[in-house]
Image (cartoon, rainbow, N blue to C red; front, side, top):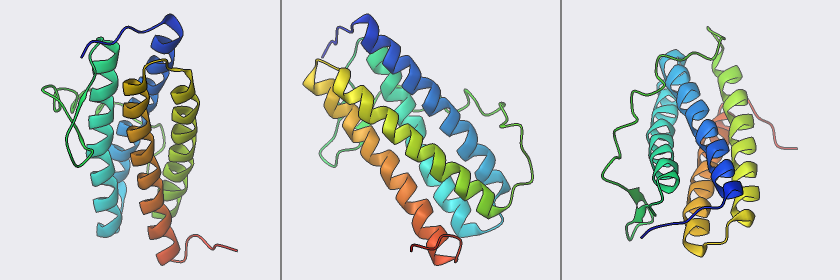
Length: 159
């Protein structure tokens, strides 16, 4: 299905694309730096999802609606084309503690989810809104998995 984007919609997608690229860089770096194997697994799982998000945003920017399967996962013919795109980029910070990485990625996911919330309301096409809403829910799940990890390790105290 073809999608016609307004200039504002295109600009919002470009912003989301840069957010997804930043998440890919962070998750790649943090998965390599994490000392706990459970945390590495969380970061790697989220990394794969972020790559799919980037692919979906790129499809929308190309004027195509990404296909969604019955489980709600996004699929595309280009799914793995962006995997190496940003792996050479660095965050500028090395040797962070597991806590510091978790705190940073949780803050990042909160921001990215909020940006999707704003973008969703700016799109005319219900199908595009549905794609963005699906991505936003996955971003929230990423944050939830990090939050649960932090809480289980005594890094995050709910008061």
